[in-house]
Length: 445
Image (cartoon, rainbow, N blue to C red; front, side, top):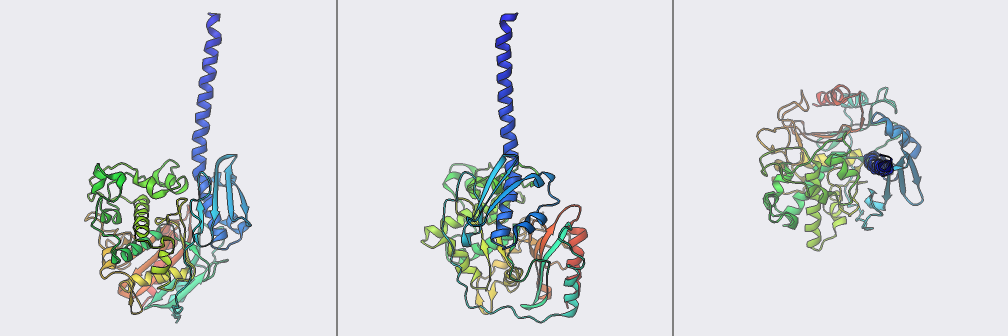
C-alpha cells in the first residue's frame, strides 16, 4: 500500500491546487464587480462632477455592501485615474478623458482618445419665477437632510411652462454640479435615435441589425423591439448578483453593446417584455455604426444634434472602453440640464420654435411596450396604471434611474419635476422619496 501513498498524495495536492486556483479566480471575478463599481463611480464623481475625493469616499458608498468599505482606491489627480482593489483582488482602473468623462477599462486603457464637441449654442438660461407653494414642497426635500442619511436629496428642479418655479440643492451641490443619470440615460438614447431616424440613419422597423446575428433567429429583432425592451434576448438585470448580465456588462466589459448582443434568444422577438440595460447598449452600438458609416463625428453627435440645441450647460456622456456611449447608464448633467431634457419631451420634441425630435416621436416614447406592460414605453417609464407614481396623473411619463433619479414629465400640468440623489436601504423610494414628489405634484396649479 505504501507504494501508492506518494502518488495519491501528489494527486490530492494537485486537486487542492487546482481547486484553490479556481476559488481564487472565482473570488477575483466577484471582487472585480464591486471594485469596478466603486472605481468608476469615484472617478466620475471626482473628475466629472468636481467633488472632493474625501467627501465622495465618505458619503457615496454606504448602505450597499460592507465589503466596499474594504476596497482600496488610489486616486491620481494629475493623471485623472482611479485604481481599485479588494485585498489585491478585483483590480480595476478608471480613466478620465476630458469631455468623454470616466471609463472603467478592463484590460488596459480605453481604445479611443477622441473628445466630443462641447461648444454650446446660444440658448438662453431657463427663466425663473418661484412659486411659493412649490418652493415650500421643494424645501421639504432638504429639511434635516444629512450626508450620511440613507436617502440623500442632491438636486430638485420644478418647471412649469418652461419656467423654473421651484429649485433646491443638498450640501455640496449647486445648479452647476453635473449629476449621474444611471438609467435615465436610456431616455436620452431614445432622443438620439429619434434624431438619427429623422436623418435617415436608422428606422424603427428595420431588422437584420448586425452581421453576428445573420443566420439565426436574432436577425428578426427590430429596432422597435429593442426600443421597447421586447427583443427576446436573455439578459439578467440583477445588480446584487456579481455574475449577472448587467453587472458583467457595466463593470467587466470593454464593449458593452457587443457583450449584450451575444446573449441567446429566449423568446420570439416582440412577444415578451423584460427590462434590460443590455438592449439599450445594443442600440447605442448600432447608433454608433450608423453615424460613423454616414461619415459623421460620432463623439460630437449628442452635443451637436441635441445638447447644444436645447442649451445643456454641462453634459458629459461617458463611453465604454471601446469608445461607445454607455446609453443605458452613464450620462452626467446638471439638475437644470435634466429639466431641459424633460421639457423637450413635455413640449412634444420642440425647443422654442425649433423641432428637435421628429413629429410623433414623443408619442412613440409613450406607447406601451406590450398590452401587458402599461408601465413602460420606448425607453421611458409610464404611469398609465398609476402604480409607479400613485396619486399622480395617468398621462405622466418619466425617466428613472438607480438611487431614485427621476425626470417626471406631467403634460396635464405643463410641468417637469427633477429629483437627483441617493436612496439606499433601509430607506426606500415609496417611503422616503415618493411622498416628497407627491408634495411637489400637489402644489402645482
